[in-house]
Image 1 (spheres, one colour):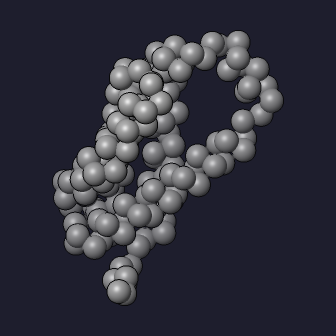
Image 2 (cartoon, one colour; image 1 turned 120 degrees about the horizontal axis):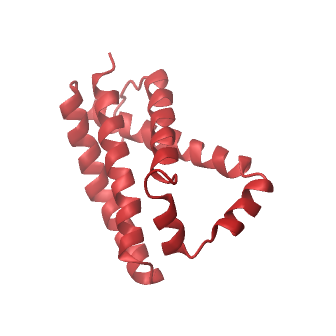
Image 3 (cartoon, one colour; image 1 turned 60 degrees about the horizontal axis):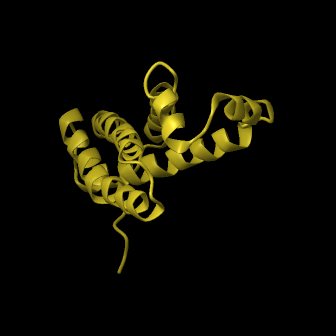
Length: 141
C-alpha cells in the first residue's frame, strides 16, 4: 500500500510546534494549571526547582521535537482531508484528539492509577493546542 503524496508546509509545521510549545508553557505554568498538575503528580516545588537547576534543556528539546512530529502528522492529515479553512482544520484537530489523545491517555490513567483530574488537565491541553494548530495548518496557504 502506497502512502499518498501530500505536500506539507514545513514552515507552518514549525510555527504550529512553536505555538503548541507556548500553549503548553502557559497551560502548565502557575498562571493556569501548573500547581494542580504538580499536586496530582505528587511533585513539590522544591523538587521541581532542583530539577530546573540541573538543566531541563534536554527535556525541552525532546518535547519540542515531539511537537514537531505531532504537527507534521496533523498537517499531513489536514492536507489529506483537503481542509482549507480554520474551522475545517479544527475539525481535523478534534478528530485526532478524540481518536488518539483522549483514548490513549484514558488507558494510561486507568492502568497507572493516575488522578482523573490530572487526566483532564492533560487531555484538555491537547484539545486546545490541536484545535488551534489544526486550524492554523489548514488555513496556512
